[in-house]
Length: 145
Image 1 (cartoon, one colour):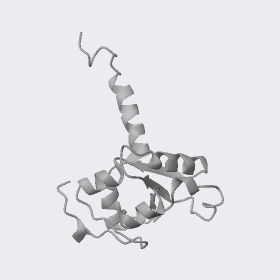
Image 2: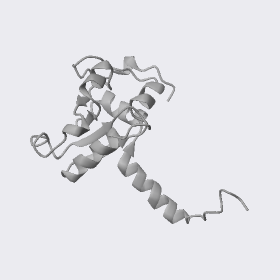
Image 3: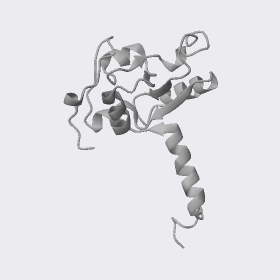
Image 4: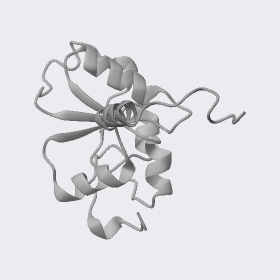
């Protein structure tokens, strides 16, 4: 028997619902970069790693908010009309998941960046360094996405 088919198959309708749900919860580097370049004001990118990791390299425009510091008090002045996109190092790191989870529990709209900073860089997007957030511009992209 087929190893792929042994676990059963979802119907086309069930598959569509599942994948639609995934798209509600996650985004990828290309879509995030397009929104940052376009100046989409509803998107706020959150680097959930340590402040030192942020300074070493982060997505331009991202704000450093380590997930361990996310509380009702530290997010009290955040705009609940924004959509917060959380990221960390990559698929071997769950900082973005923790960040998105904490923000969602606090009532914020969130998405998680698939693959984190690693996939961002792999796709050829620029990285900012230091404490300044920086800005992603179309001229900084070296990507065949």
